[in-house]
Image (cartoon, rainbow, N blue to C red; front, side, top):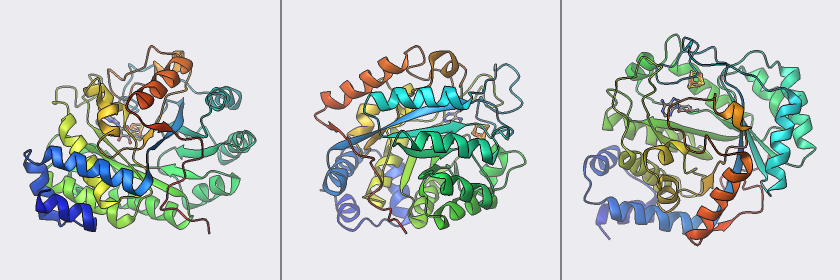
Length: 344
Ligand code: 5AD
Ligand code: SF4
């Protein structure tokens, strides 16, 4: 094994310049992916956890320049699901043995604390682990969801580069996002974060900082995905991010945080038709099949070409399961709580 990869594999430590070196050069890629795969196997085994993704509202108050859900995008037909619709999606997931649902939406203030509590209470009756992905909220809101029974929260930092963050996120504030992540940690959520790879003018140095930030914060999950240009956003003409670079970031993440949960993201699959399988073999241990009803998922267009958009919930789950089995991995039957998380 190359000495740098060996160091990362045995110590789970990399300096910033070492990460940049790995990102700049491709001659160690095969060894990097292999080391990440071995690290995953050694620390968390062969099981793949499934999370049923419910995209329950595509209405968003924010205006992130890369995202199709941004409030300035007038071309997108908007929708909201009610409690009953959401529970139906969750029940579908449960019927297929899925133990976690991820409730994802734009930043939509229509869903009050009371409404979210009602949704969470109903999902808890189904004995599901609940992950929320609702964006930036106050400490009190996060606390209320946690007390209602939510277990996990996903909030990607997107980029830790302050200049790039500002350019990409009009009227948003990097420090506030960091505060949100710290609040979620304090409330003892299992915290998921992550970054986008390949944003315009994003440097390898800043990507190395993103990795070290996530390591330092000790996230329990990290979702890494390539940027994909959406024609209905100001970044329409920008080139897509690189699949290989995103895969490298994901693999390094696995080396830096050996026990966390790492999803094989849909954006990886969008840029490479075997993207999720390749990710599962390069450090990932989670897949999030979409269990949103087809008529709605068609409208949840963060970026174009999202795979599985024409599939119904059943087909999506079955195809994910067969992918996992075909590469000799097992489907987890437990909640898939991160090995890094402890109840308080
Ligand atoms: N390409 C890839 N990923 C995107 N996201 C938003 N827009 C894009 C895009 N154009 C990601 C963000 C967000 C997640 C829900 O989707 O990282 O956190
Ligand atoms: Fe809204 Fe999230 Fe898209 Fe930003 S990335 S516009 S917050 S849905």
